[in-house]
Image (cartoon, rainbow, N blue to C red; front, top):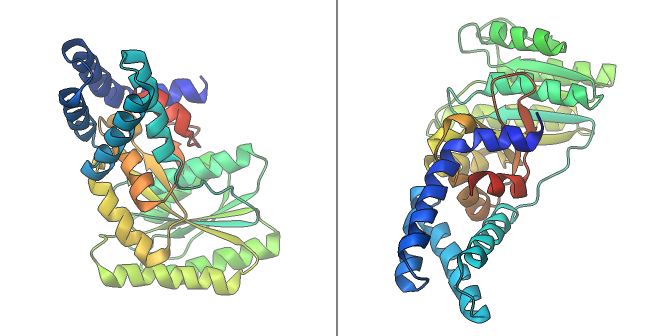
Length: 298
């Protein structure tokens, strides 16, 4: 099954809600002010933020007036174009090697699972991978990561439970330099984004990477649970202020009817989505494609 099929299936819940609402809107309203007001409500209902929904509708209204076209196909295609523009306002970085990728996020979003999927992704590209078990606080976190490392057939660096996470990062990047490893993926403990001391710990780990492995391309990726919807934006803002995020990995897209928040995330925060999880298997992680995402929700 190709990416588009996986992504389309993963976005089914979002698409079902949005498409049926749009169909109802076109069937009962001529394209005018009442139509645009209801379109804005539909977009907000799909968990696009109020600010972004207003911007989208304003752009569609202005374009439709300019071209004096008011049919369903024109408006639908215009909506797709505007949504895709919002998703691509932030440039998606190309991963360059050697790379250190540190995953951050709140508890329960799927960081450890994503480490395994990312490891598998880079292996499929012919890259060597080491994973670092820097979640030293959660009971059996290193054991869980070891299972994923074994599934992906990659090396793991880990310390005893309760160890200093930065020491794990130090050992992992030191080993990667010695072995000329292409990619180091760092799993970190889930943390409430309101806990300042935990954010300081992330900053410390970042400093270790920058000091000990300056030749590496360092990427800090926020793992976001797609079922969180628009609440994810406040999470992203705080993590970004702490470690300057390079991108986002979406998980649990297949469980969410709130996929529209991704549009607001990219547009308002200028942080790109780089990867998306489209299932539970090891290979169910793909590079994010804005055009296919929009086709998947409309």
